[in-house]
Image (cartoon, rainbow, N blue to C red; front, side, top):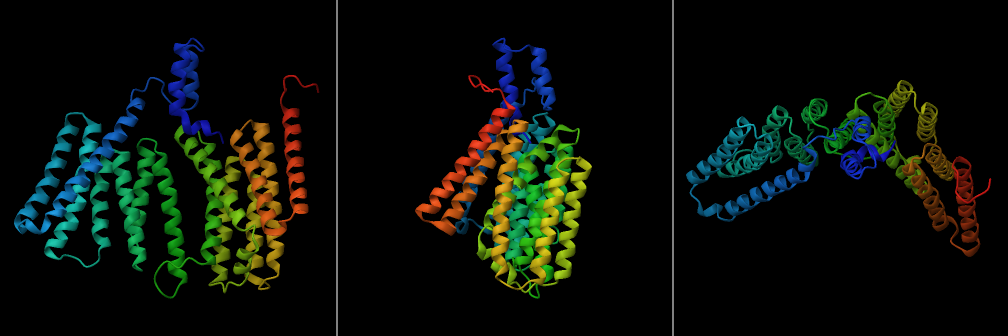
Length: 437
């Protein structure tokens, strides 16, 4: 899981510098870039920043015009308002179509982006003129639906991000008003299609993962509760942990694919699911969360355990297919299901202390494992994440449990022992200049 895969555009630029300085040959540079699935001769990469600036400029231009219209809205006759909004929207999109026919795809996307902003403003303002629709999120939904076809046809990341942002906005507005966003999976399917057919985009990939997680969590909350709305309870916490366990297995499977985009997506997903897992263990390293979980009056415990078992099976299945970290995935899956089984049947809040101690032992073991793996595989991300995990675990326990001079002395001694052991292991794995073995 090397972070360099996520910085490969910078790597391509760096190899050009190495070639010009005579450090490596052109053939070697091509081989390095080919290994990471990038083209050193690609002329589009330098224009990425230019495209971002142009898109932001169109965004602020659209906001400026919409603000100007809104400020003078009441002074404009109704017919002029209607014709002006339709004319502006139609004219901008037709000009974007003209640019597209001329082969200027990037310029066309910029104009379609601006046209999308005017399209949304037109929906809202026309609805205000004629008092159409009392359910405000519907306007945002039709705005997103209007942008979506252009994003798919042009395979444009920018337009898809606009459509996705609007879709997420509609999702949260709809759920906040206690309605179920039934068509949200349509946008998730569009994200998936774009990622398969279009250019690589980490933003869209993270958006897809977040969308799936939010939709699954909201669906569970909607089903469990007698009243509508997003009630985030203990069941959602357990379900969310299982989802990220399955996603971590998916990351390992993606990293074993042959397509470079899938490998990069797997690397990105693996990094963030690992970080999420460590953060979750830190939250559960205190006694209070376990007390609350033990006091929970579980709704449909059989369903919750069945869902957890399915997610654990998915995680193990992906790890088995990838033939990577199968033992650790199986261990955490069993730990996940075992902890849930105890939480479902045990209502004694004194058990929370046992959960807390075991959680801290797991955190310490994870930190040591990350340090060892980082040294063995020369992955600095693992190494430093392991160091931070151990030090933060000790610091939190010092604050939570001890808080005196004796405790601090013991704690810092343990820190020193762990770090000295890590340094000794590093020395055994690498040749350190000036040291005798």
